[in-house]
Length: 212
Image (cartoon, rainbow, N blue to C red; front, side):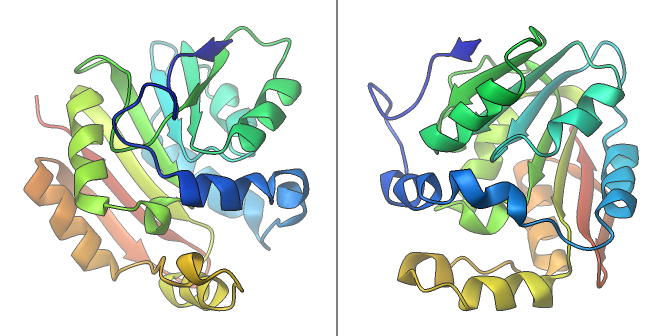
């Protein structure tokens, strides 16, 4: 199922980055980091997904994280991305699973109701937000009280930034992952309570909750 959203009729949409990621969609799954299984288990543990959870997977890409989310037994998974080509890959992969829907939208301008999401996962996408503070404020809006917000990368900050700085496309070279404490401060200002913030060789993870 495809939810409404995207460039047409939306107030905010990062078309330039959307076009760049469209070009990567069909080779994206070739980029699998080492120790993937170990890292993804730690992210799922931090997310605390249960059978009543509505999940928003922001920057889902081709939906590589979604099978692990589904293993946790959530109520619904909304796979959100700015790349139409990435979302086409998601729909092909999960075409027989009514629990998964796609949403073409910018994290700064989500066509979702206030307090409608139980768990928000921003996996390997935070550096690519055009306006990080605005995106975090919007994600705070859609998170329900008591809901969780996770930022994660399968690799530490130094590794992520080396990858981005090595990209030939100038815009992506500017997409730098800030120090974990700086990101945690942005999340606290938005209203989230930070429960865990770590930057290790294999995992960058910030786990937060929206106060009740």
